[in-house]
Length: 215
Image 1 (spheres, one colour):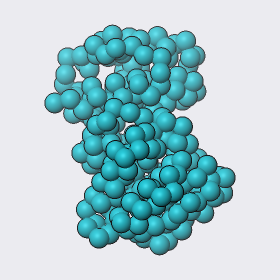
Image 2 (image 1 turned 135 degrees about the horizontal axis):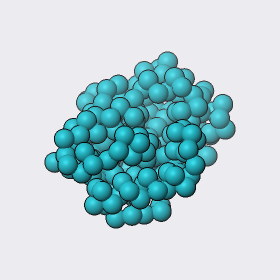
Image 3 (image 1 turned 90 degrees about the vertical axis):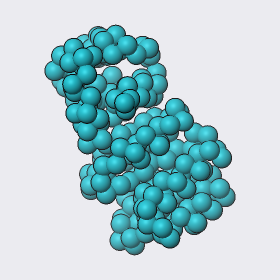
């Protein structure tokens, strides 16, 4: 699997490259600026891009905007964005086109190799990987809504894991319950929130995130 890495800090960029290579990723390019990222994504057409939000020359959201432009040119291009802090606007921009192959993680997650590589692989496969802190903030913001108030504590746990991009099997393993129990919880969640039910992991993640991000 071919990856492009974009990070302006040499030590972190080198660490990302080494970690991905250790898990059998081929590094097509490792760049440090927005213009370099744009060229790499257009010319190399990687299977996944791991991109820092803030890149030279602007050091604002250059990395994110380059990744979004590349996805417009090639819909569905898998992109995992890394950020120092939770910015809900970044999550909204990534989710705006309603397709999969997206991820948004805090840089702290990089230090957990298993968690980070799992997120990269999910995004590369067309899935969604959202940072738990992003989901937590969205849940907190919507906690006073009546539909959210109707969810049981277990259903809220399931929804948080679902919104992160976890499959029913992964949620069942995390909560030490059966997949059948998870399926029942997800069905109840969709019903209470007025969302269309779906068996497709990515579509249900996008549906939950769209609900959490309303208003």
